[in-house]
Length: 438
Ligand code: UGA
Image 1: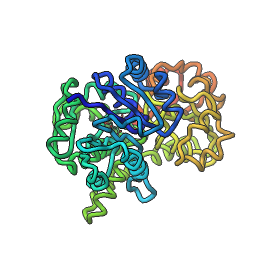
Image 2 (image 1 turned 90 degrees about the vertical axis):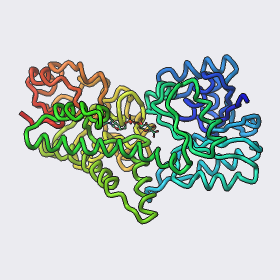
Image 3 (image 1 turned 30 degrees about the horizontal axis):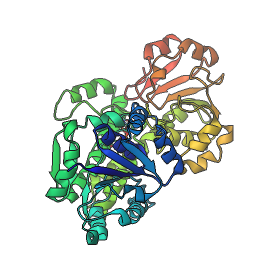
Image 4 (image 1 turned 90 degrees about the horizontal axis):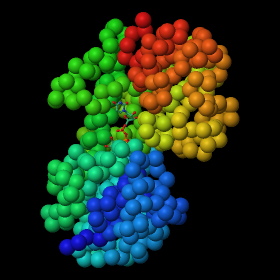
């Protein structure tokens, strides 16, 4: 049978899933409640800085393999519908399923016997059962198919995944797994609960690995070791692996913080608290605080700090749960003057409009916050430069121009991207995360 695919939600995951399946030869319809996103997809623009995504959307729309609409009725012919809506974090750490409920409510009139609803959004264990309950009378199957798409790499990760995970009963799970046949990845067909838990397990384990490395970096600094040498040795052990061993100002983004808290909350709810998970959350809070303490201790609260990098990682315009924003907020709270550079931020008004909701207290004080057009145009007399995102541009800075403007600047590289020799050659003090200051 040739499946017809529906996708609800046109964010990173939905837009990539829709374009990806159209690219693999399926007819796909997308529904989103935001008319701008619908218009964007219909004209070949996702509105996302994802390499290759707009090209793939444009080609699919032109080939009439992909359409977008605000109306669920347009999915009436779909045999498999992927739900790709946000599951933000509630104040108690659990996942907010409002958008899932709205999607299922919207889809209900279009669903019929033999159709499959696929939960691709990250959902707490048991959500599949609840959705199953809500659509069972229609003869609809519910399957979980977690996504492993990194922002900035979603197209590559969709077309070349490490694995495909499908959770549900054998027949519908087999139909969903078959959609991915041409990507040629190992496929795990498991029960729904295992698929739901596996998604949280993957993100939480990576976060935990990073928190270990962040703490190890502090220890290395204190006792005179070099974290890069240590993680290189660790990474050569195939049981540990080379990825996710770079220390930083703490992990962030729209996924790790919410997913690890959701896992903690799932475990708590059944009376089995996961101490490793809560320790990683605590360690991550402490990581950005430690960066702030180092800056304050080094230059004093009267100092002027330039923060380089505002997004939660390089290669994305996403500011959600960015450790850099936490650091900016904390430095300003100390009373310090802060300016910032980020390749995706042109001016402070554009920044204010993009600030995530969790940044509200700081955004209120944004007017006195300077945005730098390029990193070396720092304000004369800047006392400290803190590199908080690993953008390429920070690898090749004109350090003599920086030193000319701010000869006393202390440079603190929390991402390990700065050319230490060039900084020192310009006569500036330098410190890299995970290495004792020499
Ligand atoms: C993450 C996962 O990597 C994806 O597999 C998953 O599908 C996605 O969440 C999701 O659940 O939707 P993403 O949030 O785009 O993807 O970010 P990552 O590239 O995983 O980075 C997460 C954080 O770890 C960032 O703050 C990054 O700066 C930090 N990081 C990563 C380090 O500090 N060091 C490293 O070596 C690697």
